[in-house]
Image (cartoon, rainbow, N blue to C red; front, top):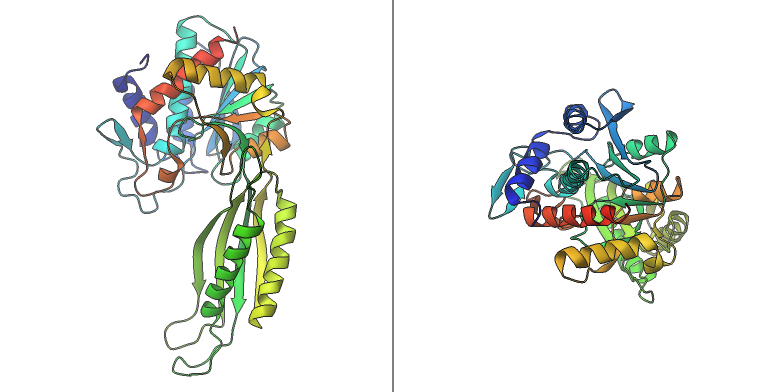
Length: 373
């Protein structure tokens, strides 16, 4: 491997040590800005808010290819010592290791090597903030006129070449009952109603949102993230609310999903004979880049992966929202998502990444960018 585990682990550990929770990335932004300036390249600081800014640098004329990664992470949540990275058996553990400081480290390593070799492909490296919350970093890139023929986003894909991005729909599902004494046999328990409504909704979504007859099929991913309601054991809860997230095939856009979900919930409410409401809170439209594998940049990235790893990469969709959703739809920039790490570890108490995969991603990215020169 061109990038040994000591070099990769040292850089990634340093990145993970910064508690760069969304909205509070400033220390990491300053570190990265100084680090890149130390390579002798010009760095642009794009203020997004007082506590975080995008770090952008260009080689050559920039503009042809953009490589993008986000610096922010989710909070510690249930991960102990989240910002004290440890490495065991070639695996680094820590908040953001997978999502997505492993991808950021790969970007930095590839950039360093290009500078050392005095190679200047027309590439822009964009390290952005706020991806995990509102996407304000990506929006600022576009506001400042960012353009590219393609953007490579180094989110965790397990080194799968993702030529498409899922759509998403986030909403609250609320059920209403009637408060009464906790010892009453006749009651209308909102939590019971909500769990029934959710089960009915999940079954219908899995059927209606399943896209199986497609070159890149995808069944919906449904996460019941939170349930709240009630006053305690002695009172029947009059109201219960849940927070739900659905990711679905990019051929189903947000407006279509919203319309379908309103109809589904209305049916469920009628069948239960109870008031059940849906309140949308967020949504995004997915995409598949035009001509799929015929996109010259996708073809080159696939070839670079084959050359570096001696394996054929999986090609398909990333089944989560990324900054690519905004860059594609608001900026008109085709996006390919490719990076180290398994998304199942992201946001978790066991967040981790294989240093070998970070090294592979860096070398593939370097090979890809060298072909532009």
